[in-house]
Image 1 (cartoon, rainbow, N blue to C red):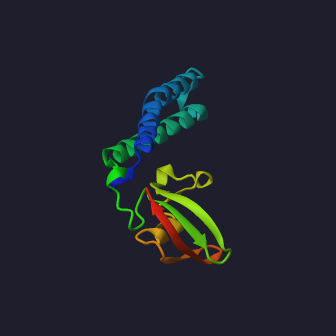
Image 2 (cartoon, rainbow, N blue to C red; image 1 turned 90 degrees about the horizontal axis):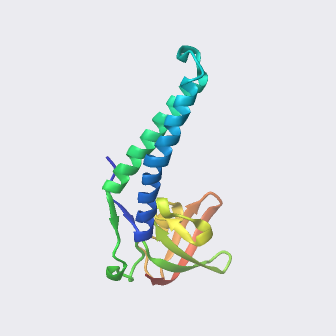
Image 3 (cartoon, rainbow, N blue to C red; image 1 turned 30 degrees about the horizontal axis):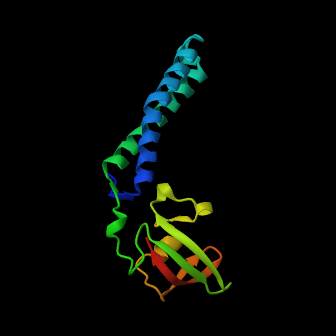
Length: 157
């Protein structure tokens, strides 16, 4: 069983839509593939049928995983967030001390991460390194390229 996961309202809605799509269109497509493969003859030597049945199993596993995730999902009330330290959904401005360059990030759940949009996972090395930090703190984060030092300049919601 998965632990509690926190989402934005939009992120939770996307997850619900993804699940509904898999249950409706995904299952219908899978049934059609199995029926098409079954129509091709002897099932004992039908690689298409075996592949379709295996894909169906993967789809059902993914549906079960999403259902468990939704059962443990909680929406964060941003109006009650503490902005004195970095938490999930905090919007932060940090300065990379090595390159003297500023970046803006929003810390989100792994399912909502999108680096191009400035949304980093709280489970990523940078996300983990920033959690709990306050304005003025310097986070020293081990990344594949070496030690990254980020100074926290602002925290908002």
